[in-house]
Image (cartoon, rainbow, N blue to C red; front, side, top):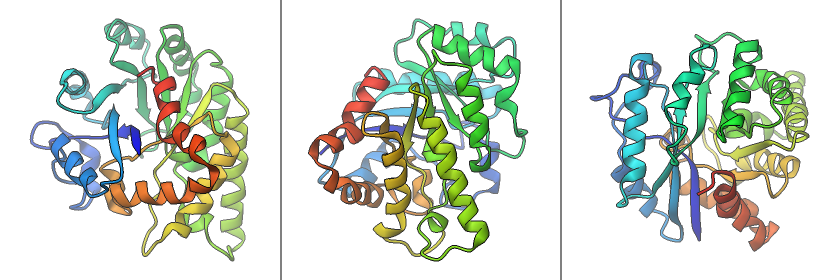
Amino acid sequence: MKLIDTHLHLWNINEFSLPWLDGEGSVLKRNYSINDYSKDMAAGSDYEIEKAVYVEVDSADFEKERENQYALNLCRDSSNMVSAAIISGDLTKDQFKEYINAYRDIPQVKGVRQVLHVPSVKPGTCLSGQFIENVRYLGENDFLFEGCLRNEELHDLYQMAKQCPDTMIVLDHMGIADPDIISKPAPDAEELAYKRQWIKNLTLLAGLEHVVCKISGLNPAGEWNVDTLRPAVDIALDIFGEDRVMFASNYPVCNIATGLSPWIKSLDEITRERGEEFQKKLFYNNAKRIYHL
C-alpha cells in the first residue's frame, strides 16, 4: 500500500533548540533524521510512504526561520520523500502577514501551525481578533492552518474556524484524544463526560465543511492492542467522513506509545472493513488533494 504521511517531525537537538524536549524522556530527547524515519518505516514492508509532509517542531522563537529553511531543504531534496512543509508562525502578532508573505511564492509551503497545547499558551489564544484575522489571511493566500490544541479547548478551535470559512483548517491528532478513556468498557462519570465532550466537539468541527482531521496522535499509556485504538479511530472517521480524514504518523512522537509501523498496521486493520476505496482516500488521495501534492 502506498501512503502519504501528513505529519512528520524531524529534529537535530545539536543544531536546534527545542525547549519543550526538556520535559521529555529519552525516547524523544535525541536526534531524528530522515534516515531514522526510513529505517523505522522499513519495518513495515507492506507499506511504502511515497510522500511526507514535514510539520514544524515548535523550535525556539529565535530559530523559527532557520527551521523553515531546514524544512524547505528537505522538500527540495529529491532523494527523500518529504514533499511539503507546514511551517511555524505566531498568529498573535500583527507582523504575521509580513512574515508569511515571504513564503507566498514557495510551493512547498502549504500552511502554518502554531502549537496551542503547551503550558505557555493561554486558553482562548486562537479566539483573539488578531489571531482570527491572521487565519483569514492564510486562506486568502492559499495557505491552510493546522490546529494543535488541548482536548478540552477544541470548542475554541470550532469558534475560530466558524469565523474563517475561507481557510482550510486541519485538526491535528483528532483533538489529542485519550484512547484509554475512549476505549474503556466501563468508564466512570468523569471519563464518560470526557468522551461525550470530545465527540460533541468533533461533531461541531466536522459540521464546518472547511475543517478536516488527521487520524493520528493516539498514545495509550500502557499495554495496548488494536482494540485500544479502534473506538477513537472509528468515532473520528464516522464523524468526519471518508473525504475529510487523512493518515498521519506523528513520527517520532508515535514512538512514545505505538511506534511507526505498528500504528500503520493497526490503522490498516481498523479500516480494512470499510473497503479499498475508503482506505485509498484515508492513506493517500485526501492528503494529495488537501495539501496539493
